[in-house]
Image 1 (cartoon, rainbow, N blue to C red):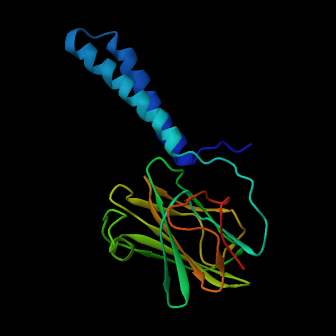
Image 2: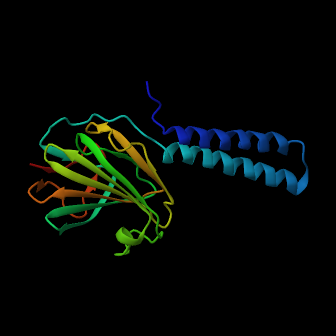
Image 3: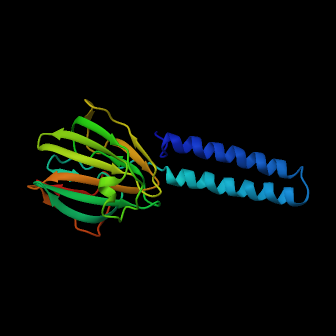
Length: 212
């Protein structure tokens, strides 16, 4: 059974826990303010360890298998839906408290993965989706090409992508992660009927974004 935590989270939490135990044990051999400092540090590291386990959570999910439906690629809140060159773009904001793993909204083949360096503007800035550091994944499906854009933000400074050009992906497959939240954009052909609206809360691999 898969541990419901991203492997980086297990490592981070483990390191923090080991350091917490070291500081806690060391504090018993110290006096005065040094005892207080090491004891406090132990508790801070313990809290960081627990936060890492929560932050890097990656629960198993029952994926809806329907070829006519497009699923959400991320957990979060829809902040805007707009049209651009016969495409409709659904923008999802992920807070630091949301689950941060992205999943494939559909089945297909990875056509391109393009990483762009950039700024780290807050997600609510209009220019963030253009100027911020981002990773663009293009997937070819039986219904055409779709794009998933992972966008870094003011806190999210690391984008992780787990798929490569030529890979076959299945609906609901884990494809990447944005650490500490930020934004994921999903570009869909305009002939698909949207099932969500601005302000809706969505979950990766569960919420139906659109259907044909």
